[in-house]
Image 1 (cartoon, rainbow, N blue to C red):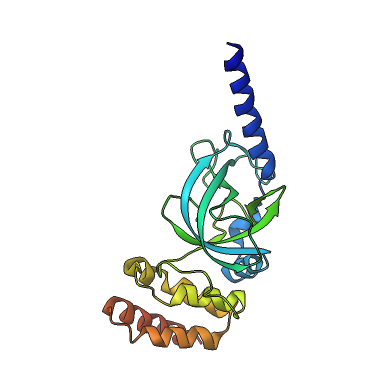
Image 2 (image 1 turned 120 degrees about the vertical axis):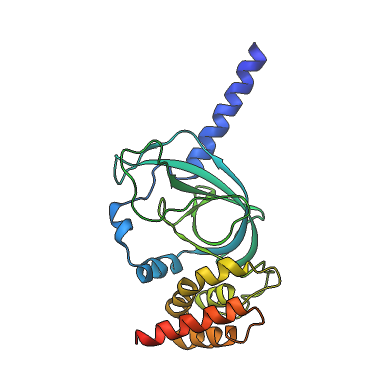
Length: 235
């Protein structure tokens, strides 16, 4: 019984340490739900650490609790472990890398969030915007989606060398790799093109999209032509 108590104490101490490693308060504000995409992108780009990674493990820490930004909403402190494929900005101390994200808990909340939210899942490949937090890392934003999905395939370290973070992100999003998920790549094309334009430049986004019109997979080539035609009609 004494040994059981000791082990339980260690487990509790570990849980407290994990909770303290990430700020115990979420960063959610109702205004996050109305933040225009370009403003969100610029806010994310200002993060001290930006990494591309594939999710290896997702674990809840503790129980859902009322958000500091809206007590009708319950948030869940979540520990995410990723395999870092590329450090786009800043420096990280380890790979795999663990960080914290307060996710939305629909079952415990009194109201629906009403906007897209980030739901971490093993196998996802995304760009994460992070900051140091008491010996660990956490997302620069919580609850809503402060990530960029990457459907272009896996990447190797060093592809960002000599490039600005924004232009590296543009290439990550819009240059297909060998194990590309073509279906999701086409679905994401409009958002990816816009992100490339905001974070890098309109000319870079245009050049990358033009190259996609010559891609061997007709789904991608046709999708690129449609996005180009749509963006031109808006200008």
